[in-house]
Length: 297
Picture 1 (cartoon, rainbow, N blue to C red):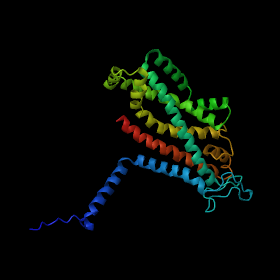
Picture 2 (picture 1 turned 45 degrees about the horizontal axis):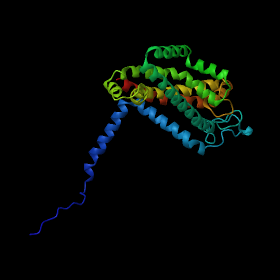
Picture 3 (picture 1 turned 120 degrees about the horizontal axis):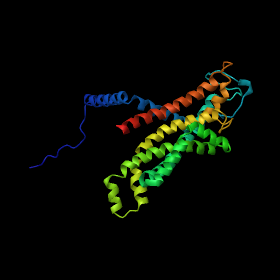
Picture 4 (picture 1 turned 180 degrees about the vertical axis):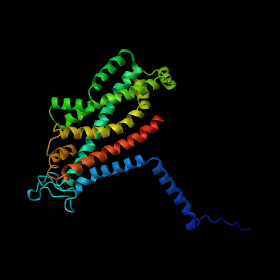
């Protein structure tokens, strides 16, 4: 008696059975867009700007190349964002500025996050006089608006890009100190911290090996918002001719150079780089607001 071997070849799935799966995925995608419209817009803008910053400089011309014969050309197919008073292509300068501004903004955010979280965990975990001294110094720094503090620091130092990054980072460090400290005060009362102490770990090891990693959630979300503020602050300093100087392709520099052209009708020299600043800040803030709302809930 021969035994029939079942056919294990892949079954043919008729086309009509694939339809509901595709429809359900489409409905889920549309549902996510309806529930999180700001997150979708923010991520889309950020992907566009990051892609432009990474690939764009290889596809456009030299941002410093001048052409006296083509000054103040209106936006056209030849020059998408027009040209400025020196005949430089505004689109090429805006694309190169995207790489510079996003890099500076992210660097400032990471630097402020690192320093602020380090100080915040010390203040929150050890408490006592250490906490008191750190928080009073933090209050002193917070007495100055961030932009004004960065302006003072850069004006007092040499106006270089490194000093701009350090100055703006200092302005945002207190924000992360407070965020991390508040979270550490909650974490240090939990049972796993007592278990880590009973296991023989030193206070420093418990603070930085166990408490700090579990306290970084709000600070990481806050870093997204700070990146947007950092881009805006750096651009504002450059607009005031403090920090990054012409002819460097930077959005604030371009807005500052083009501001005087608006009166004579050449609006594009400042409007397009200003629009790039708006899009960048919107992208980071939309993402940060969405994740911040989820963290709060």
